[in-house]
Length: 542
Image 1 (cartoon, rainbow, N blue to C red):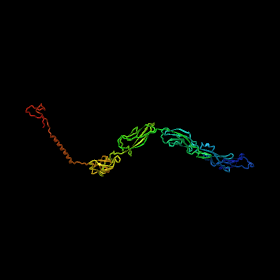
Image 2: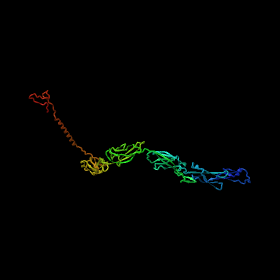
Image 3: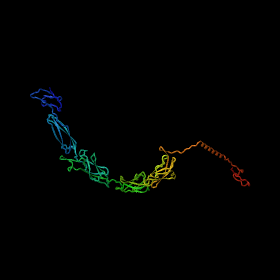
Image 4: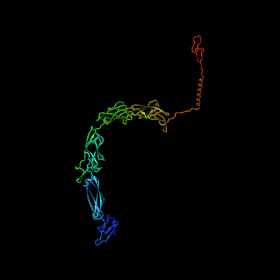
């Protein structure tokens, strides 16, 4: 074997090979890895003047390995893909243009939303070489199938004012697309807007519910006609053209629904649910304030209850609902609001199963009376004697105008008038003025306060007169005194003299004894039968 030549293999994508006759007759061979050409036996020049060594044919190559196209069905049945393949062994580039016809694949498009088509470019070499490219076709499904109700008629759908019923449909379009999602609507039977239709986003079912109450006197059937369509408008292809509207399209599917409306226990109805009454406060109890009028379409037997009466001022008759005052009503009570209104709530309850009830609110507007006397806000005040001789008198009266201020102030004691005066003596406040300097201490002043209607309040005001130095009230102590030594001696001497006189008086009294009579045995009896006898007293006192 003779090495004839070594070729440099630079950038060929195919293999090197010798022409068929040189290889088949085993004259020459080439190392495909190194490019070395070997001669294996003598060559007759006359028979083989030359051998050609050339590069092996290159596989035809596509300009792109992958292609993506979109197909919208049903009318888009052709996908145009322009593919270029190149073979380095050929002088000309072959452009191939071809069509993929979806007619045979249309039934498959209902199952898959993406398809992959493999193209092969193959030359005519021996052996032939080839390469491939992929075309991905994404199927865009339009709304080509209308939703259809699974039941043609729904009977006995039951509702009693609450709850809902469900309507099921079937749609063969791609799930969770606008061409699949159902949209329900009323065709007839809901003229009063009592019902509402919604779509369950998960199951695509229609939900029928009640949104407005209606009083049915007895059990009633309501006939509803309900239609369904998709969010995306339905379309179809006819002779290669897409039809979206017109008489050639199918009408939406519909279903007949019969809803049983059950007559529920209606509550008693007050003719007036809010009542305003006007009463004078402090009126004597026992007065009938209000009697309600109530109607119950389902029952003639119902009772009344007192629901709210915070001050316990009224009572309600269980049978008639008559409201009666049982206590005097005070406008100034904390249970009366800022508008002088006291609210009472009663309820009417029927004998249904379960019982139904309704309520009525009675607002009692209380008119004021002069039932409160004016009185001092503070019954004890401080007068700073070293700074001022006046204090102001503040008054409170729980009554409203014209039964309150301005007030008239006066002194209720003549002795007080010598030391005090009132200025101002008329107004919302009064002023008490000291006429003469006072010793520091406590003083009581009797006051008379009258409102506009001469309702009198008598108050005793305690005034503390003090020295307000450093904003502190200091009451001066009473004057003190002490005795000197001579005075003490004089007091002792006087006391001793008093004791001497007392002792002398005691000693001047003599001790007295009893005398006995000469006539013994007679004791306390006087003898009268002796003539000329001198009578002597039995006992004599010196």
